[in-house]
Image (cartoon, rainbow, N blue to C red):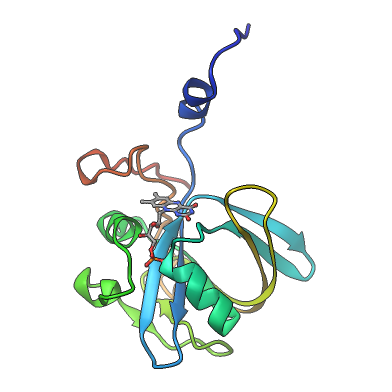
Length: 173
Ligand SMILES: Cc1cc2nc3c(=O)[nH]c(=O)nc-3n(C[C@H](O)[C@H](O)[C@H](O)COP(=O)(O)O)c2cc1C
């Protein structure tokens, strides 16, 4: 049975929420990554993602500039790196280097692949919608990559609050 409540309390019950990484690269060659929980598949054929990316994020600026990005599903050992890039803004720093995230060249976009992710999806920007306070970025998948090691599993989530001390890894399959 359900009882009426306030938005904050109901929203707190939705966890665990999945998390992905979104990487970008500016025209000067500077790479960046952020954590994104607001992610869904927007189309199957062609495959598209829809990501809620705050307009204060450096990533949002870079996606608008370059019209491309990579969506990476982090590997299960990447919790600290996910939190690091999810808690710091990249304008004036190299978060990828600072947290030791390994990257490699993509094939069709300039944004890098995340080497230790389970899978990477190179995307070209299709559109940005603003139905509310968070821009919805839609990207079409133009190339895909999987981890060579099939035993690397996905880091599905980190705990609500996004604090380093409360990392919770939900193991899947
Ligand atoms: C687990 C987790 C999930 C997050 N989900 C989102 C999200 O869906 N959208 C968003 O705009 N920011 C999200 N963030 C916050 C961004 O990752 C954070 O603001 C980051 O510093 C932005 O980096 P940038 O400014 O270098 O692009 C999340 C952070 C964490 C740790």
